[in-house]
Structure formats: C-alpha cells, structure tokens
Amino acid sequence: MTYILYGDTGSGSAMVEMALAEAGQAAELRAVPLEGDHQLRAEYRAINPMGRIPTLILPDGTVLTESLAILVTLAERHPEAALLPPPGSTERAVALRWMTLMAAEFYPHVTRWDYPQRFGPAEAADVIRQRAEEMGHDILRLVEEQAGLKGHPPFLLGARFSAADIPLAVMSRWMGGRKWTPANCPKLEALARAVAARPAIAPIWARHRLSPAP
Ligand SMILES: N[C@@H](CCC(=O)N[C@@H](CS)C(=O)NCC(=O)O)C(=O)O
Image (cartoon, rainbow, N blue to C red; front, side, top):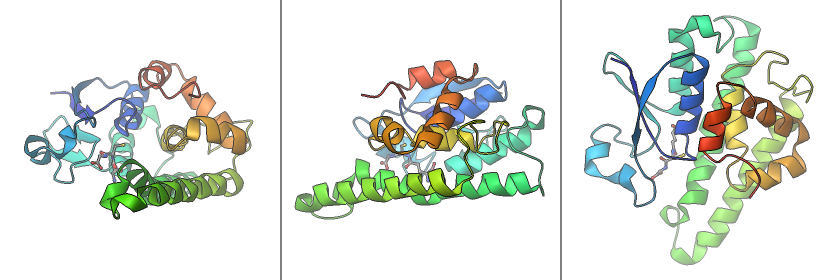
C-alpha cells in the first residue's frame, strides 16, 4: 500500500504533498473540494471527524490528521530524506518551535478568515475576517524578525532546507499573503521563493497556484 492524501488545491494538503515529494514518496491524491463543503460531509467525517484537510492515510491504514503531526511523522518515517534535523538536536527544537507556531497559532486565523460566519453574526463577518488577517500578519512579522531568517541563505535553518520551511512558505501565501508577504517580510519572501524553486516542490507549488501574486 502507498500513502493516500485527502486534500484540495491551494489548501494545507499542498504542504503534505511537498513533504512526500521531498521524501521521494508516492501518494494517491483524493480530492475533497472545499468549494461545496465536501470536507463536512458524513462520508469524509467518517475519516476525519474534524472535517478538515489534510488527512494522510499511512501505508498500514492508520489515519493521520493535523498538518504538524503529518509533517513530523513523514520526517521520522523517511530519515534518509533528512526532512528534520536529528531528535535531540538544537536545530530540531528550533524547527519544531516555528512549525508549531504556524500550525497552532497561524492556521486558526485562516479558519476565521475563510469561515467568519462560524465565529459571529453575519454582520460581524468583515470585522472577524479583517482581524484574523491582521493577527496572521502579526505572526508573519514575528517570524520575519525573530526566527533568525537571514534572507541569504534563505531557509529557517540557514542553508539547510527542512520540513519547517514548508508551512512557513505555504502559509505565507494565504490570507492575502501573495501580495502582503513580499511587501512586508523580505526574508520570509526569500524563504518562500527558495522553497518554491526546489525541484521536488516546484510543480506542486505551481499546481496549488501559490504564485504569482494575484
Ligand atoms: N489543524 C488542522 C487545520 C486544517 C485546516 O484548517 N484545513 C483547512 C483547509 S487549508 C480546512 O480543511 N478547512 C475547512 C473547514 O474548516 O471547514 C491542520 O493543521 O491540519
């Protein structure tokens, strides 16, 4: 059996596709269109009760949800790809810090931006959306200033690419980020461009329409 990945164009499943490609792993892609809320249908919720994508089915049939858990698991299962520095290393701790920030703090703002009606009355939707975008941008600014990015070399860990670069790059495109990030976070933008240019990732980046700026 191979990996099975549930996802949609432009969604968080792009990050998992990129990690799989960097690890040289094939995956069967199964579409769960967010347009029309297919992720909330009973047949998909039987797989991922949160009604979210991505979901990765491991070759042994285990259901894995949560993008952070998926990326770390792929790094652990394919050590030859060196998607993360070794357990116990300082570099791994740094990678996990910023991966967790993006998954635990940034991603929920994306939910508020995408689905403001879940968080308040219809007349509050614009305010909820705008605040989610501002708070997301605050996090990207924090990454720009505090994550030790140098611009050159471009990655979180310097010259060494890691799985931590994937959520930083992909999420920096969301919530208006295709325009906002190049204008406001040059080091994060350099990281995103370097991730987008990686041979294994470039076709996935293009297919998920992560650039150019709209
Ligand atoms: N905590 C989840 C969040 C996943 C998530 O919010 N995915 C979005 C797509 S990028 C989604 O499925 N949204 C649909 C919905 O909330 O109904 C993760 O890290 O994987």
